[in-house]
Length: 351
Ligand SMILES: Cc1ncc(COP(=O)(O)O)c(C=O)c1O
Image (cartoon, rainbow, N blue to C red):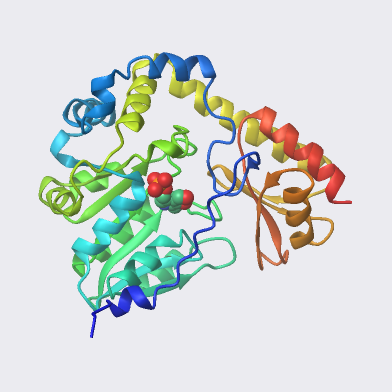
């Protein structure tokens, strides 16, 4: 009989991310507006025929990124989006049949990658819209191989204090549990736990260029950790796994004086604007850290989502049972122009 891996066969995947052309995309926490055409042209002018024809060269970029982050190049593994880093950390640091602990609801791929490799995903439920750190600490024991935490958390945008993360890492170290700290939404929120990844064995931080850097198409992310652990993650990567165009744009942003700060400010201003406008309109809004908010609609959430898509060409999501508010709209934030378009459409649809 032809063999099919049972873990793959039973895996439930949703590939709903295509056919989004022509919509204002506020459903996947991307940057909805993107760079100016002028900046794009300037960066692409560096793409020679040779650059396009050859495999991507990572060494120089890796050195530059390491300096930007204040780490050694060997403490860094470049990946095809941070999803690839997360996948390989789960693959390398949990055993077949082993347990991966993480908060739920959260980024779905922690559980999917765990199941893909035949691990058991153990969910730690939220306490309303906050992680219950004491509960999470109780769940860390010798049976767990790997713990995944995010800062800020997706979907609620709550965060860990330094003291809370220290307690988590201490308990994990005592029980020989690897810790993955997902900082995909770093730069929307300043605090980082990168220092823990450098200080402790088997603590990793993953980050992405998809979110604040606005490079969703570039598929570029990375993991940071001690050299020995990072070498394991690197071994699992396919050859030439990162995108040359992603690196070209990421490098241009890092090189351009003040550009990242400007992007951070633009995103923060847009979020502040939409939240205050929604509140002026009488909406209940949950806005933690990160580029996403929950809105309690005045009418039916599913109907609002459908009409926003069909009539207004705006993609958003719904989320059930949010903090006693019932089903809410889940909307990615972005710069002011996108938020104005969203509000104008919401005014028409939700009344
Ligand atoms: C918490 C979190 N981590 C990781 C990712 C993966 O992002 P990427 O693979 O684009 O870096 C996402 C994407 O939405 C996310 O929300």
